[in-house]
Amino acid sequence: MNFTTHVTFGMLVGAIFLGKLDLILLIAIGSAIPDMDREYGFFSKDYFRYHQIHRALCHNFLFLGILYLLNPFIALGAFLHTLLDALTTTKDRGVEWLYPFSRLVKRSIYDHTGKRKELDPKTRIYMYQDDPVELTRKTNVDLRDYTPRPWRRSYGPAVSGGILDIGIFVGSAALLALLVLISVYGGIRVIDFSSPLIIDNETVPLLVGALGIILVLSIGELGRRSEAKKVSRTPPFLWKLSFFLSLSLIALGIILGAYLNPGLLTGFEVKLLYIGAGVVTVFFVAFVLLKIYSMRSLARIKKGDHPKAI
Image (cartoon, rainbow, N blue to C red; front, side, top):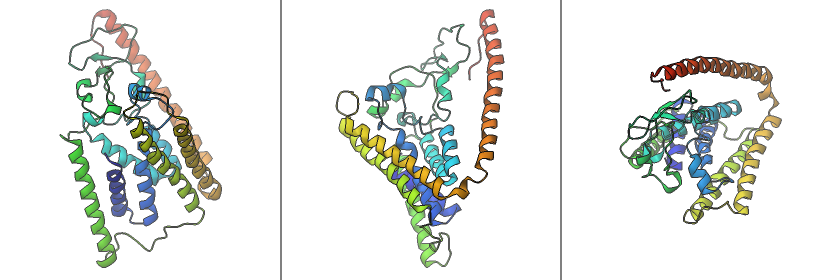
């Protein structure tokens, strides 16, 4: 979906459920972040397309969890962005929610036509089927995928992603405008315009980080479009430099926010220990279960039975 749709929808959700200008702004910023995984970085077009980075690198639960540790409202905006993209069609490439873990499974039992593939006894975990590659041929040039690969993405039921995008944008913009009018002239304070938009020690870090995001999306998009019709090559030096500076500004905003607001870090070390323990526990349980599953699947293959897919 388009940038304007993501930001407008995020602002609408913030207006309805939170109603404070500063929180609405944070959600709007978060709604723009996931599209940083477009063809803006140090990789060539061929690398970008082969590895299908867009709608994966910054459109997943792990990335959302990292953002949540930084700011829950920014994370909410990023989640709303990812959710909308998950409703798009195969042509729009959907969303890879479980990236990078979904990339650990390399093979599937059935190809994109439904024909059963020959199984490898050394491969213990399979996806059920390949991605519908024929439909991905109809997508944008930078997202086309001609390589058969396991089905890792989630797609929505809409017939047209473009019509869905327009509908969500128009509906969100109309409702947001209505809430503004009601709040200003209707006597019902749905959006609290008296809430401070500028907060001491938080505004500067927020603006620095937002500037970095704007640079990534604006300069990166201009560069990507200018290179779209050219043969795949390593991005020019200035393109790399702008990308590096943009990421540096985002990192600087995060560091400034932590430095200027030490109270936000109070008790964070304890929370971090619990989070780390939880991650280790999840990975340990997953490893044990996958080990048991793989041993049973290998035994079935040796007996001639069909292994289960995930």
